Image (cartoon, rainbow, N blue to C red; front, side, top):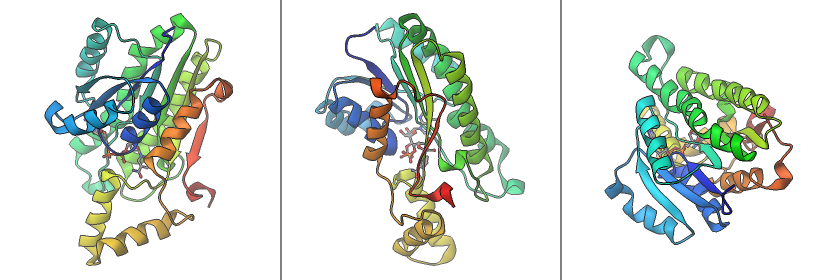
Length: 259
Ligand code: NAD
C-alpha cells in the first residue's frame, strides 16, 4: 500500500470537489485534481491547493466519454500513480420537464453523474483489491433518495449511484474496501448558484429572494452545507474508525430527507 494514501477527486476544480480536495490535502493525503476546465483556467486554484499539501497534478478530462476516462487512468498508471481513495464527485444538472428534456442532455447527465463512477471503479478497484485497502466515496445527493420535479436525469443518476454504491460495497466487503454514498442537500456552489439565478429570472424576483426561497422549500435547517463540511465527512470515511461503514447512503441535508 502507498505509505501516504493517494486520492483522486473528480470535479475538484470547483465547489464540493474543491472542498474535499482541500480537506484531504490538509490532512496529509496526496490528491490528483481533475475537472473539465483547461490547465490555464484552473492555474490559480491548483496553486492555492498546492499550498495545502501534495497535489499530484491537475487533469482536464471530459468524463462524459468512457474512452477519455480510460486514457486518463492509463496516464495515471504510466505516471506511477495508484488510486487508494476514489471520490466520484463531478456532476452536472439540467432542469426541464420530461416532455421537454433534450435527449442529448439526458445522455450527458447520465454519462457524467453515473456511468463515469462505474468506469472509474473498473479502473481503480483492481489496485485496491490487490492491496486489500481502498475507499470509494460517491457524491450522490438527497436526490438519490427523494425526487424533485423537472430533474429527471439528475434524480435518476443520483438514485443510480446509490445502487452502484451498494453493489460495489458487497463485491468488496471482505477486501478492506468500503464504498459509500454521501447525499448532500443544498450546498452553495456554482451548480446551485446557476439554479438560483435561473429561478430569480423566471419568477421576476431578486437573487437573494430566490436563494432564500430555495432553502425554505426543502432544507429545514434553512442554511447551506459547506464544501469543507463534506470534505470532513470524506476524511472520516477514510479513517480506520469508518471501516465498518459500507454500502451506506449518508445524508448531509439539514433534514431535507427526514420530512
Ligand atoms: P460544481 O458545478 O461547482 O462543480 C462541478 C465539477 O464537475 C467541476 O469541477 C467540473 O469541472 C466537473 N465537471 C462537470 N462536467 C464535467 C465533465 N463532463 N467532465 C469532467 N468534469 C466535469 O458542482 P458542485 O455543486 O460542487 O457539485 C459536485 C457534486 O456534488 C455533483 O455530483 C453534484 O451533483 C453533487 N451535489 C451537489 C449539491 C449542491 O447543492 N451543490 C447537492 C447535492 C449533490
